[in-house]
Image 1 (cartoon, helix red, strand yellow):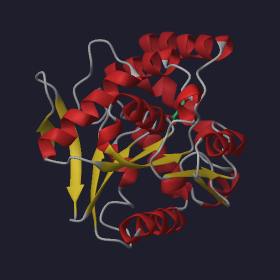
Image 2: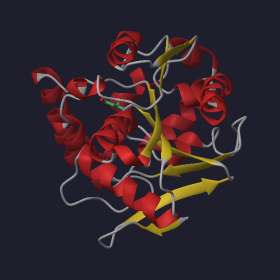
Image 3: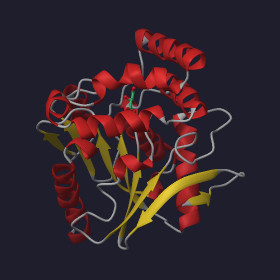
Image 4: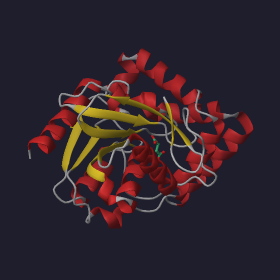
Length: 265
Ligand code: MLT
């Protein structure tokens, strides 16, 4: 469905089940269908909500895209759905947005799940790569970005054994709207270093990473885990950058275990 989310903005979202609100934020250049295997499929009573971030899927783009602006849009979406606090679950770019949401709206965060993501900002080389991708997208369209992102998206096991998963992710990246791709790249390029805020995270946090992730490798996940007091780290064997799609059962298992700890605490 599509919901209003402040200032004339529209957000695409799926809202499945009842119970503990769990909000899912996709990576770049994905959309909310990244979480199809999680919605309504957790082993705890949960209201699972997946948003298209601004500019992606069915959501309208922001005039000045930033991870902070994306976080504010998600909070406006939660307002529309009448959700006060949620477990904010973000993969990669979604994780950058989840950390921004914690910095800006901590009272809306029941817990954090940071999947295949990192705290650090882009360095000079990384920023130059984003600029090159922006130029490629302007010249050749969103498909050019999908082509450049594809090789690192899944792990070697998925690439060898799951052509269906590779093809589905490829199709998702290729259908990303150009405005979203351009805005997303600018937001990724300009995101701040979240490292200084990690020590102040006071909500339960689960860090998940595929052991074959080459875009945000396990060393990034370990840095998050060491930086966030009391956090838990789960490495998923045989998965690359999109753990929730590559190993959905394992992802749902570690997420459900974490959520069970929250509801029984
Ligand atoms: C993502 O999956 O969201 C991107 O790989 C994040 C990034 O490029 O930093």
